[in-house]
Amino acid sequence: MVRLADIAYPSLRQITAFLSPRRIVFGIDSRKDLAKEIRRLEGSRPLIVTYAEPKLISTVEEIVKILRSDGMDPIVYDQAEPEPRIEVAENLATYARNGSFDVVIGIGGGSAMDLAKIASMSVTNPKPVRDYLGVDLVPKKGSSLVCIPTTAGTGSEVTMFSVLSVGKKKMDVASPHIIPDVALIDPFLTATMPPQLTAGTGMDALSQAIETVTSLAATPLTDCLALTAIQLAAKWLRAACADGSNLEARSGMALAATLSGLAFGSGKLTLGHSLAQTFGPARKISHGLSCGIALPYVMDFYLPVIPERLSLIAEAMMVETRGLSVSEAGKVAIHTVTKLVEDVGIPLSLKEFGFAKGEMSELAEICAREWPRPNSPRELTDQAVREVLEKMWEGRILA
Ligand SMILES: [Fe+2]
Image (cartoon, rainbow, N blue to C red; front, side):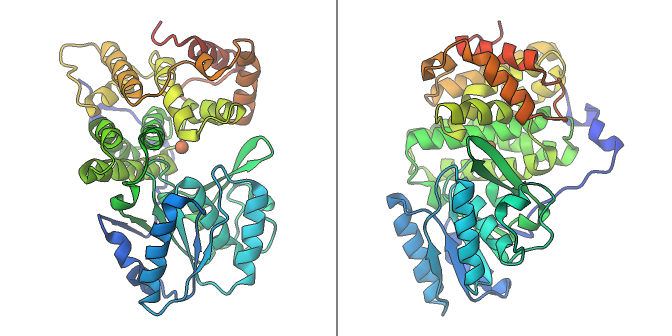
């Protein structure tokens, strides 16, 4: 059995920083405290960024009512979209600059929160959003920012990333200046997610946590968060998919997503998200679903070099590993994750999504070029990624 205290951390040979929101408010019905949180930030003129989606309308109406009863007059911008395009971000930036908002509230899944980050930063940073794509290119903190997730997956409510679609590519604004001031997580708001969305977003949270555990940038702090997120997802994802009204399961998954966001925000992602960001957009497969498909293969890829870290994942998933070698325990982790992916109805091969085997080499080349991960414990060469993608195409795990 491997203990966290036995792990050697490459990241601790250099200076590391852990980033997070100033306040994380968590709990069923915590949305009712939003006005109080805005006052705490000394805000009074809120802009709500969300999508015009039937399931979200009543949530947004309730939030507006809560704020109005506190004397505020929120403006709702509902032109957010899933996998938001840079053009949508530019329009929102212009809208936010022309208003006199002092606090931005993002309500929705990762994309609504990511766009709220853009609205907030645009108030004080006047250039086109395009100019801020990249790492640490936002010079100033924007208006106050509160993020309220209605899915349990991306953890965007606690991270410094805003992911945008630029043509066919995914690119991000990555800056400490866009970390929300307040992450307000009310698991009740996730209860209307249908099973397929619950499964996909849950897999995003699990994948982010597992990738962070595999990362060379992981620290004891990120491991504590990531391993707890893994434990919660292992315990609650099936139940949340089976019965959306189970608030205990919804709370477990909401917490898993937030912990996963806190973990990968500083511990960084590895091959899973590189693959998901490459093949997902090619067939319009959602981000979460793409993460779920890739996850067992990514663990398989890393098993030869970090078996002790995969063994920690097995223990986090509450699987018996006593008497097993570290490598055997790592394999158990892969089997356990594979079973979870299957149980929540996610297919495990790329051919089921209409890909041809011949496409794998081009995808591998794009993946290695566009999404290199310096913190990956195995180098992501074209050939290494192609071998993983070919296994994924066939549905060949641990073979
Ligand atoms: Fe993700």
